[in-house]
Length: 102
Image: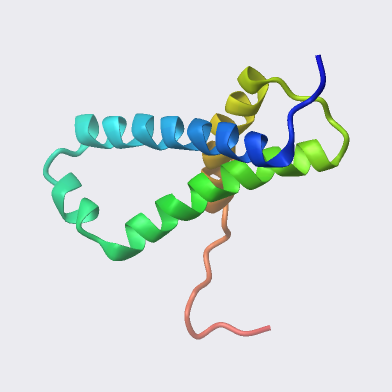
């Protein structure tokens, strides 16, 4: 079986990103139901979610352009993983304290 084209891979990866974000929204609703409505009304929250979904598709395209042969299930897996990888990068950002300089 031939590998998929970048366009197809993008959409499989984006589908995986949507699945991951759906899981994250479900967890948010289960853990903090009182905070969820305010967060869901935030424009920037949805911009960030959209960015993570698009990044999922772009990550699959990067794999394909790197001559990696992906099947749809692998593309979905890469798409699901990408939002969690981005989230782990964000949670490990070192704190910046105001007023300090080198």
